[in-house]
Amino acid sequence: MLVSTAQGFRSYQQDSAWTWEHQALVRARFVAGDPVVAAQVEVVRRDILCQSRDEGALAADVQKMRARMRKHLLSGEPIGTADFHLKQGRGGIVDIEFMVQYAVLAWAHRVPDLAHWSDNVRILETLGREGLFEQPECDALTGAYLAYRSAVHQLSLQQHPGVVPADRFDEFRAAVCAKWQQLFAPYMTTNDEDTGVE
Image: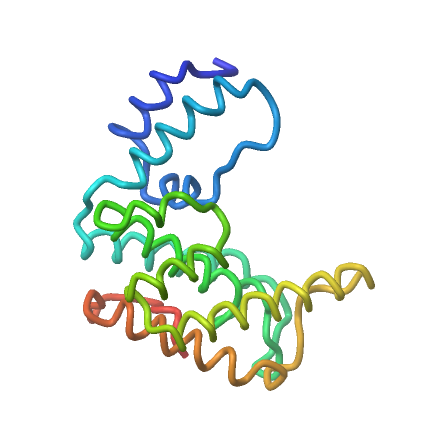
């Protein structure tokens, strides 16, 4: 089918969706179309995001997906250790996005305001306000996210790939990697191939 009913969408999200599909729901938002349908989808989105989840299983799924993405998307690129891929590199944009998505999926059942927003900056503000992340961590992650996005856009306008010298964002990368380690360390096992931390 080209489209699904609202009930079909709800049933799929409740019974069959993978963790990465719920991660995508964190960023989903209405941009155009029938406001009635938009309202129905938003109700489903919030209900799914606010479900209680096993944090350990969720953390494992998020880390595995992140490792697969990095392996697949960076495997063929000629990026050396002196380079930093702003989006996919360790401590980059996607690491921030995955931590934010994990936080929403893990804690929105206790703090429904996390499911209200679809953008990373306001979710990070909510995480700091609610004491789920330390405020300096939220500030560092927000600063890194905005700086990386700005750099990616500038490079894109010049038709350059989103790669910069590794030392350009040293402090931001260190802060992102430290938060990744702190957030996921309780759930890491010796079998984890890639934790997102160098």
